[in-house]
Image 1 (cartoon, rainbow over the protein chains, first blue to last red):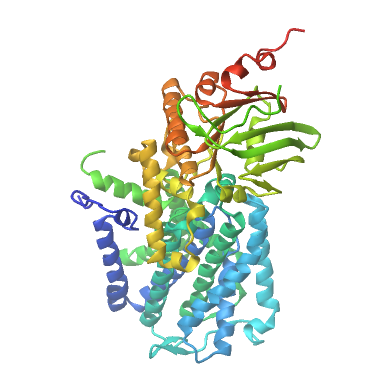
Image 2 (image 1 turned 30 degrees about the vertical axis):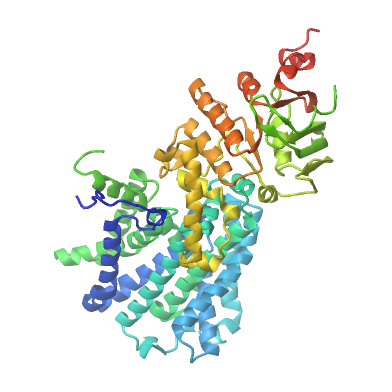
Length: 358
Length: 273
C-alpha cells in the first residue's frame, strides 16, 4: 500500500545507484528530518529532549562509529567508550586553548584526535583477528581509562578530576554550559549527527565502504583483488574512532555538562556494542534503531505505570524494566538474528507487495 | 621431452592469434617447512592462449596458482610477467599488474550484492580520494557511475542481469561461480587464473561455464590459466596443458600430445608394481 514503486522507472545508472532510489523513501527521510528539526524542538518537553532525544542521538552516532568498524569492516572492538573519551578530553583541551573558537568546530576537530589514537590501537588488527583483536581493543580501553585518571594535564589538574564544560556561545546562542537550553543543545546534536551520518553513508556506498566490506567478508580475496588490508583496516579504525570521538565530545558538552572517567568506561563500550548488535550489524538505520531500543525503551517502560495510574513502587518498576528489556532482546534476536534493521527491511519488502504474499 | 612446448607466435585452428610469452616461470621450487610442494617446475603462458594446469590430487596445482599471483613466495626460481622479472610481491601487487583469479571454493563477498561484488573487482581502477568519497558528489559520483557502466557490461556478458541486486549468499552455487568470474573479469585482467571453475557443477552448468571461458578468451582476448579435473573440459578448452604430479612437471604440450603421454597415464591410473 505505502510502497508502490509502479511507474518509477530508473533510466540512468545514477538514479539506480542513488542511496534512496525509491520515491517513498525520499519522502520518508524528508518527513523524519522535518519532525526532528521542527516538530520535536517546538513541542518536546525539556525532559523529553534532555533525557531521551539528546542521549539517543549521541548514542546512535557512537553506534554508527562502532558499526563502521564491526558491522562494515568486521573488526570487533571493545574500546568505543575510551575513543569517545578521547574525543571528549581533546575537545575540553581545545576549548581551554581556544576559548573564542566556535565550539561546534572544536567538537568536529576533536574527532581527529580520537581517529589518531584509534589508528594506533588499530595496528594490531593487521596481524590478529576475532577474539584476540577484542582483547587488544580492551587493552586500549584500560590504557586510555588509566590516562584519563593519571594524566592531570587532560583535565587541567583540577581537584575533582572531572572535566566541566564551560559556557560557550556559537551562532549567537549559548550552546554549552548550564545556561544552554535543551532545545538549542538538541538542535546542535541533531545537526552534527545528521551531518556525520550523511558523510559516513557516502563513504559506505562508495569505493572505501566496499573495500571495508570486502575485508569483512573475505579478507584473502580482497587482498587478491587489490585492496590493501593496511589501508582498509586503518581507515575503518580512523573513521570509526572519529565518529565515536565526536559522539563522546557531544556527550560531555551537550548532554552531561561534566564528566569523569566513569563516563567512558568499558560498560559504555558494551552498551554501544549491544546497540549495534540489536540494531543490526552493517546498517546505519540499525544504529539508530538499536540506540532507540536500548536507551528509550527503559524510559518508556518506567513511565508506563505512572501513566496508567498503577501504584507500583520504584524498585519493582526497575526490576520489571530489566526483565521486560531482557526478554525483548532475546525475543528480537530469536526472530531476527540480524537485528532490528533486517526486521525493518523485511517489513518494507512485505509492504511493497501487500496484500499479496509475494 | 623438451623443457617447454614450442612457443612461437602462431594462429590456432580456430583462427586466434597466440602471441609472445606473457608469463614465464623458471625452475620454481616451493617448500613448506620440510614438504616440497613444487619442485623445479618451468613453463610459460602465451599471450591469448588458454593454458590448463592438471594433475592428480595434491600435485601442487593450486600452489602453482598461488605462486603466480603472489600469495606464496617460491624459495627458488624466477617469474617473469610481461617482460618484468618479479621479486617478492604481495597479492595486491599482482592484482595491480593485471592478474586476477577465481577460487576453488567460491570466495565471494557473501554479504554484498552481485553488483557490489563485481564493482569490488574494479577496486583498483577507482582513484577518487577520501574527501570526494565523503561527499559522494562530483568526481566521486561520476567515477562511480562510469565504473557501474563497465560492470553492467560484465553483467550483460555473463547473463546475470536478473540477480544484480541479490546478495550473493542467497545464490545457487553455479551462479556464484559465474559472479566470481564476473568479479575477476571486472578488473580487465591481462592474465586470468581460474582455480577449478567447474568443480561441483552439473553438465549443463559446465557447458555454460565452458562457453563463458571461451567467450572471454575469444571476445576479450584475455589470457587464461586454469586448473580443472574434468578431462573432457580440459581437452576441449585448452590450447596447451601442463601436467604436474607430486610437485614435478611430468608433461607439457597440446592436449592430444599430453593425453597419450605415458607418464601422464601412469600418474592418473597408477603403475603396476
